[in-house]
Image (cartoon, helix red, strand yellow):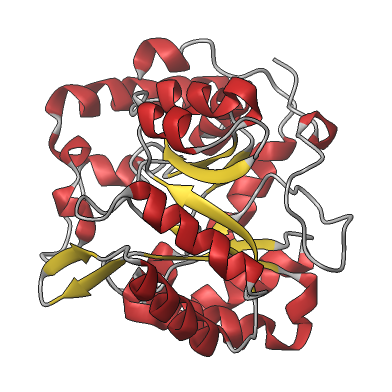
Length: 313
């Protein structure tokens, strides 16, 4: 498999206002784990250095949400990029919030507007490059939420609108052909259910397919997580894959194969994803400069992807 080249991606892929020649426009940096909440102990200074290093290496797309660490991930992006605002592409999301220990949906038009206002304040900007519906709200017609996002664009508050976690049916019913709307979809070698959704987005060029959780919260690329216990407040405790004994056995074999063939698990997973024509954007969430470098090194690795990836995972 030849590594997918940037020119194979649709020219409509959203880019920053400046720096249209951004390196790797299909690689966005996610910030869910950067806010210092939900993923165990973390030094926020490492998150800042990770963002700064990403910018130095030519990455210009950064994805966040008001839901992430209750806004602290957005504040981190403001600190990192306020001086180069028009050279970066900032995407955030609304429609999801935490109250106590519970997660709630609120994708009413007025709620999405308030969420955007708060995001703009935390990010220290008067516009967002992309604002997305985080999840569909079961109590609000999806069409109403989408119309609200379109209204925010018409007001000049956002450059693009997008969606996240739609079903294949919702993509086909609510996204028109040719719209090329950014859609964030959970997809990786162990969570293959997303492929049908990605394929729906490809039909009639409805979506720019953005893959989230490409490494399944680190499980696919960190052998230590097969044995390492997670803290009580770690959000990964709610991920069933972390408790799947049969999957862990397959992962152990996968890591051994990577070791024998001298290819990193990160490289194997990235290339597995890029080998799917349905994938337009990959959004990993590195927490440290070292993790980011491993991703970039994996992209440059010219060796063939492990043929066993599909068999193991």
